[in-house]
Image (cartoon, rainbow, N blue to C red; front, side, top):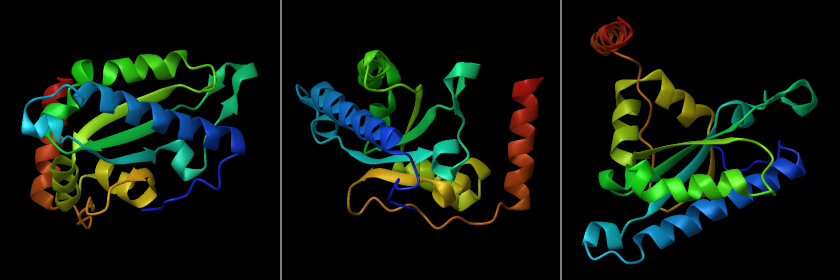
Length: 167
């Protein structure tokens, strides 16, 4: 996984730094009064930029009514910390109202186990993030699994699940 955003213009680099700081600050506040050990010791293990800004094919044409959004994967240390309403809503609201951030920000929150399970199964979404993503924040020891090829069985299961959800 890449670790720098040097390919982005300075304005986008500054916005991503601000977004990362807001996410870290609001998460610290959300867990600050915790009594349960899993919550009190909760960590953001990684913040990964993925999608068009990571690949370098973003669109920044506000005059034409379109700007690519920042897609961020937040990897946390416990499954309960993925709850958007409890841990991430205030951060999302702050980011949206922050005048120093001109582009929309979309976050998804998962545990390292969830991401690594997807990588070992060869799920395209996770493999693309591992291949193209850029770590904006990373704790040591929070390593992504080596992406594996999608097995035929897993491909059939994913296809069946998608068909069931669509039908």
